[in-house]
Length: 229
Ligand SMILES: [Cu+2]
Image 1 (cartoon, rainbow, N blue to C red):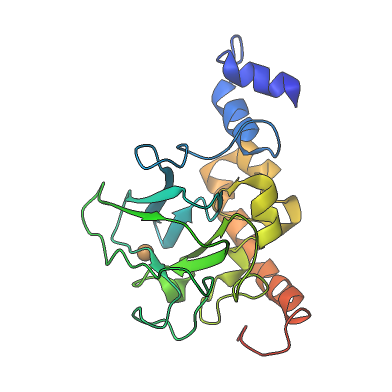
Image 2: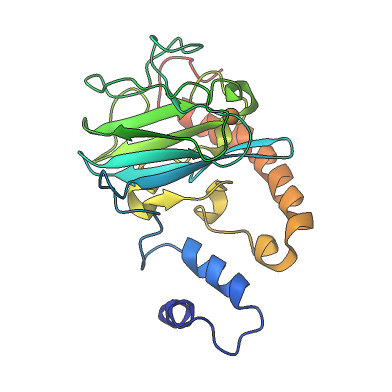
């Protein structure tokens, strides 16, 4: 672990594959803060919104912030929104943010590079989605301070790809989890991703889909209601 961080910091001198080593180290747990930005108003944490082929992505898909810190969503490709699961927002029937939290909705950002910023204040777990792509699994989670509220022990009821959401405790531990989140590896990169590049990226997603049912089932043990369907 230490050695890898050293290699990353010094630019990977002598390593032909320094780019690969760097990206793997950046996603490892512990050590350096994996978040982009520092959470202040002038340097907020950044979540990218992207369209990649038939995938619609919030990245990181899991993020930890402290009360009072800022998150900025950047529309990197395609058209997306960052919208809290709040009954006052379009297409959201349930609230999946802390009770005393302010709902937010960026609206659909169509211009590349367009941004939306929100300050997190109430502690707890926040689930949010993209209006056009929610049913295609474009959902993500932010924990502010500590896990809590209606989203802490459940999955969004209407997101097909809900298996990609990290649980709140993992978010607190790791601070940021890249898309795609794979529960079995604790959010780190699949070995195949580091070795194979784009072709194997597809395989990773097949694997992810195969885990969706099992992962969702895990939450049904914790909840008495049936909202996961
Ligand atoms: Cu979207």
